[in-house]
Length: 162
Image 1 (cartoon, rainbow, N blue to C red):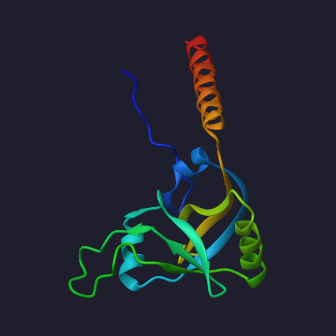
Image 2 (cartoon, helix red, strand yellow; image 1 turned 90 degrees about the horizontal axis):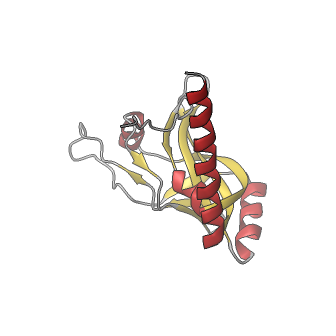
């Protein structure tokens, strides 16, 4: 039986939204800061986050991350955070205006693709968000087909070397 390996994440990644690239065509990406409490940061450092059903919305000229799950920090007693509350994203005004213009167009949405730490000593939590267009069923089938073909080619090349 073949060993299953997790997809290699880049250094500093806490969570990736692998479903986003399967469900959507990602058109344009932005890096956004995120406003977090202390226990949320500690939980992220432990790798306890999920972006699967999260999305970005604009309210009163500010970007908000909705539906992202950051697990409660086990060492915090009563001062813990709510796991799925809306979190404010820090974007430039021009980027927010681009997102607003894109979401007005039919079929476009904004989804988070990964959550990571960046900076000199990896001290700042960042979210990569992407403007995305939903894929049709046949697009998803094409994605599966191309992924399977690439896997078969890699397997054949690996077996030729033996």
